[in-house]
Amino acid sequence: MATIKDVAKLAGVALSTASYALNGDSKVSAKTKAKVLEAARELNYRKNGFAMDLKRSRTNTIALILTDLSGPYYSELIRSVQDVALTNGYDLIACSSMGGRDSTAVRFLREKRVDGAIVLAHNIHDDILMESAGTRFPIIVMDRQLSGDHLVSVLVDGEQGGYLATRRLIRGGHESIAYISGPANSYDNALRYQGYLRAMREAGLEEKSKWRLNGNFVREGGFSATKTMIMQGELPSAVFYGNDEMAIGGLKAFADSGISVPQDISVIGFDDIQLSEYVRPQLTTIRQPKHEAGSLAGHLLFQMLNGERVNPSYTLTIDLVERESVRPL
Image 1 (cartoon, one colour):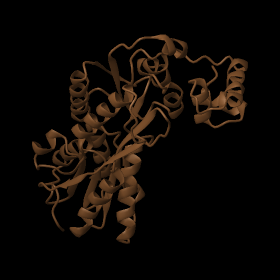
Image 2 (cartoon, one colour; image 1 turned 135 degrees about the vertical axis):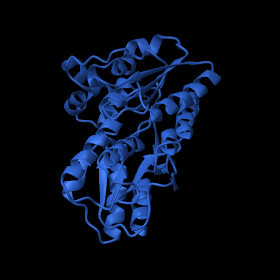
Image 3 (cartoon, helix red, strand yellow; image 1 turned 180 degrees about the horizontal axis):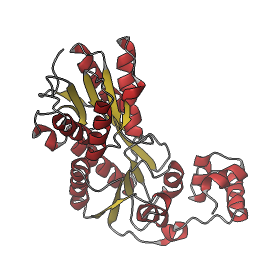
C-alpha cells in the first residue's frame, strides 16, 4: 500500500508539504495541492479517516500512545495526563504501540477516533505522525523532535542528563565506565548516549566495545546485560544505565554474583522512578520531570484543540539525585 512518502516523492515535494496538502492546509498553494492530490490518486493512496475528520464532531476523548503500558515511568505519565484530561472534561484512552503500523494505536491516529493524541512511542514512524496531524487533530510528540503546524514536541534534555550522570562518575575518579543502553531506535536513548560520549571525550576516556550492551529499557534487559558483562571477566569501575528499570535489574545481577554496589562497582540510573529510593543500595540517578512533562503535554494539546497558538517545541531540564549507589574510587 502506498504511503505518504510515496506521494511526496511522486509529486516532487517535501514530506511535510504532502502532509499539509492532504490535510487541506491553507499554507499550501492550489497548484501544489493539486499536484499532491493527483499523485495520491495515481498511487491509490488512501488516508483513513481524513474525510471523516473534516465532518465529525468532537468525541471529548484524547489518546495517550505509549510503547508499553507497564512500568512505573509510564504509570506516572498516564496519571499526569489523565488529571489534565479530566480537568478539561475529557476522557483518556491509553494504548500501546506494540504491533507498529498495524497496531490499534496507529488506527487511532489514522482514523482519528479521538480528538487528539500524545505520543511517546519510538516505533510510531514520523510519516504516520505527519500524515495524521491536522487542524482538527493535533498531536503532541514526547520522544523526538518533529516539526509541523499541528505537531508539537515536548522533550527532556536527555543529552545533558547523560552528560551529568557520566561526569558524576568521572568526578569520583572512575575512568572505566560502561553504558547499558535502551532500544537502538529510541530518541531518548540516543540523547543519553550522546551525553555519555561527550563526557567521556572531554575527560580523554574511551568507551570499550565489550561493555556496549543493550538492556532495552526493561528490568530483565538490565539484568541480562549485566550478567553478560560479568561473564566477560573484567568489570568497569562504574556503570551508567540508560534508565532506572535497567539499573535495578543490574543491581540484582551484581548481588546474585556476590559483587557489592558501591563497594566493588558504582551504579547510576536515569528517570528517578519511585522504586529507586526503595532498592538497596538506594539508586543515584538523574531525575527527569515525568509528571511535569505529562501535564505540559496535556495542557498544550488542549490549547491546540481550542485553536490557540503554542510553541513548536518545549524542553524540560533534569537534576542529579545523589543516593547510595555511587562512591569515589
